[in-house]
Length: 447
Image 1 (cartoon, rainbow, N blue to C red):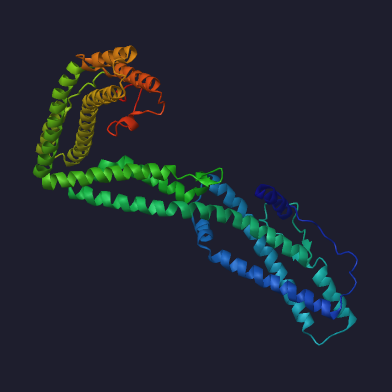
Image 2 (image 1 turned 45 degrees about the horizontal axis):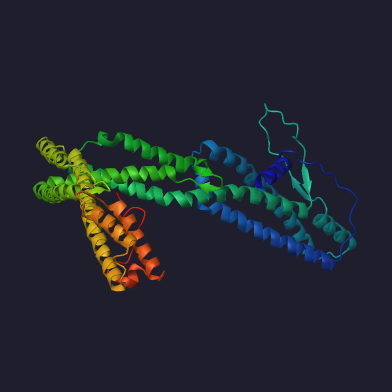
């Protein structure tokens, strides 16, 4: 886990080990010295590039320059110690390699130089000196020099670099996910300002919305890691702001349209309301027929939203007189939705009522078809069939009738017809292609 790695590396920074030079290692061959020196120089170049990239990294620069707060501030303060340590170790490591390179480039080739280069490349030659403390502060580690081998220095730089970039990468992931969304919110906010100016609204009109947006911006910029839960970026804060901003923008656009084309808009609304009223009036007349003819299922009730919709039109006229364009735009959007809902409800009710009458006609037709087939087979006068026919006929021609009971009785009639004919595969589909379904439970009619 990253957390455990952080702790180990941190202890290595704040508690330097006092390494004293021990016994010298056996001297390496000149070939071994050249190989070790070249490898160490390659590592130095690699970390130099890492540091250059880190210094120019956009997210790293933003973290350095931003007044961070909260969780992000704590994690970045922790990560900075590793960045600082990385530079210290790298500088000391580079200095050792520079000295080794100079020695190897000299004209000497004696055993003493061979021993010295071996000690530099394999012994604790990288010295990490403590920072100078202010005169009034006492640091028990002052004067202690931490000595590392070149291999230990490379491992130390690897660890420091990982710990630093782990935090930078985490922040960058959040910013990559949220900055585009934040940019979209800024664009929407600018459009809201333009629309507000066009209809004469003051800046204070959306002060609360402005404050919400600014709070979201500060969180994204100053404490992005606050928005990370279980390894995932939480975009809900910006999503809520987006919904609010788009709603306000929609209201302002409606207001602007109302200001410029109020008469045409009201005419269209009145026309739509007239259409709904016609549908409702048809439903009322149709329901009267259904109630007279069908007892079950019970016919749906018909609501009348027309008076409320007409009042909405009148209230819009009052808002227009007072120049309340924003409220007028919001009222327009709400009234349009109510008209659409009323139209959908009226059409649904009409379809339901029409379906009841059609179902009764369907069941009557099926009974006639079954009866004709029974006559053809010479079974129509059989007592069981005759009684069932009379029962179904009474159910379907009663006023009002019970479609549920009629459906069950009709299914019984077909079942007996199958038994008497000895043809259990006999169905309404084989009898006639006209009626293709049999629903015993409820007459095939939804409430």
